[in-house]
Image (cartoon, rainbow, N blue to C red):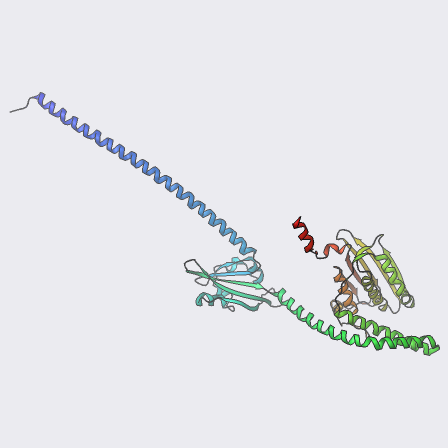
Amino acid sequence: MNQTPDNLDQDLLHFFSEAFQSFDSASEKLADAYADLEKRLENVNRELERTNQELSQSLQEKEALHNQLACILESMTAAVVAVNLDGNISLFNRSAEQLMGKKGSQVIGQPYAQIFGNRPFLLETLTSHQPYVGLEGSIKTLDTTEPIPVQIGTVLIQQSDGQVLGALEMIHDISERKELEEQLGRSTALAELGRMAAEVAHDLRNPLGAIRLYAGMLQQELTDDRKQLADSVVRGLDTLESITYNLLSLARPIKPSFQFVDFTDLVQEVITYTRYAIIENEIQLIEDYAASLICYGDFEQLKQIVLNIILNAVQAMPEGGELSLIGQTDEKRELLVFCVKDTGCGIPSDIQEKIFTPFFTTKPSGSGLGLHTVNRIVQAHFGRIRVESQESQGTSFYIELPTDARQNQLPVFEIDALTDQLET
């Protein structure tokens, strides 16, 4: 039976109605799925953003740590050289540049064996995994006249899981330590020699004192040529007594009794002792002092310094000359500067650095201890002595002493006083 057009339209409308309903339902599900996907995507974006922030912060922290480590390596006084697994130089700090006379830009990336082939310890550590500790040697570069004593140590560069990344070498310049060791050796030998000399000098003082007494008695009783002979004997005994005193002082520590000293009065007292020798040698004395010359020291020890240097100046002018005594105050450096200047024979340049060395002398009858003792006294007063001299033109000794050495003395910590303060 054939359907009528009305029935056909009804069926078609029903079909389209169901289709639209199905489409609406699918659209709603799709919209819900899209909304859910948007939420998930938003969560993923937030998670990615948080992860990116963490990674960025971690990267900044690592970069800051890297910069800090780089600054530490560059600031180290030890030379640091590192190589990677291929034996190529990967690190060369500033101290390494200074010690080995090469720029980091020249050696980084280069094979270590090619640059430092005669120093195999770092590469041996890289291959054998055995570190070296406390190896001593020396390094010679084109810029140095003498080899530089060094101490070398090597170690592997490893991650926390034990994976080897390379090897590192640290090189310490031990020039100062070696110099101190040599000075200590010389000081020990000198102390032993000083003790022996002091024992000899002590044994000589008693018979010398008796001979000096008898010679003085003869000096008073004799006349004419024999008196001159007695005078010569007394002068010789005075020289021997001075030598024995210097030998005794060599082994004895110098401990100044500090007080404020008027240096002008001190110099005038020394001039009283030396005036006869100055007049006898026909020396013109020139004095030039500042209005106030005050320092902090031991009056008798400082007097010994000035007396020794003035007598040396007089002896340097046997045919006369000018002796200038100049005292000034350096207010900026808080120093008293005293100069003894003569126009005598001068000191050869090749021995000027040796004149303060014990037992070094150019005088036939000298002990070589006078200027050494002078230098020790000056150092005990936290001062400095220096010399300027030219042969045949004269010599100038400059003594620099703190105007107030109390600030240079080590502090004294009173335990009882601290305890009382804590109890109160």
